[in-house]
Image (cartoon, rainbow, N blue to C red; front, side, top):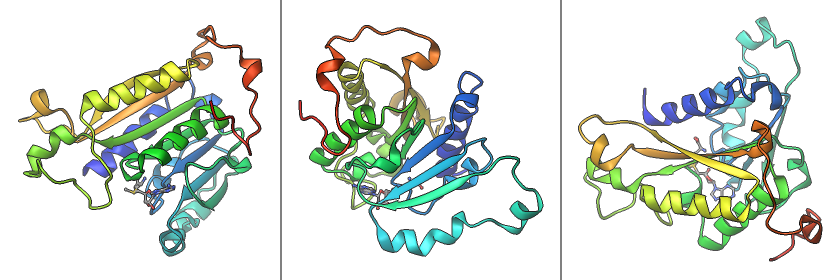
Length: 235
Ligand code: SAM
């Protein structure tokens, strides 16, 4: 399958992991674009999906993709599924995202300027504090396969990271938000090149430790940092 589909498949595989599949009810898909992930999400036992994107025209144009199909009417879900579409930036806290169990951000972060990227991580890992966070981004090392060593894959990309840069960014998140651990996956193998340049896309899976019944010792007194979602603390 094409790489975009392999990304969706990998997200789906992660979400049906028996360690947490029965503990996730609400998912927010950040930078949802054309709602492509929905065709996989609708087969999960979720109760609520919130799609977020900043491109109003795109959301309006593609909204038909989250409408029930005839097949869905014939073979109905056993539980209800509420879907909302929010126009806005992934950097902004929003009460509609409270109690979200999973945040996905597929091929989004490379579209964000550094200040928005910072606010995005703060919004997710502090305000929302979900059980799982799945982030994918291009692996720039792979660009030699496309003969695009000197230019980005898409004109709107603000940067493209090596595996080391993405791992450093993710490890830094885990240092700042120690209730999480992170693991990395490659998506889109190309056998001639995999050993040297890795996969086409790279994924970081952040897991909140209490989901695995792992304890963590906070390095700061959490009582000093109780944030109101509408006015996140700045430190
Ligand atoms: N996640 C999509 C998928 O898997 O098919 C693809 C994402 S597309 C490459 C990037 C999307 O991020 C675009 O739809 C763009 O409008 C959105 N985006 C860019 N900056 C954003 C922001 N600050 N807040 C929300 N969405 C943003």
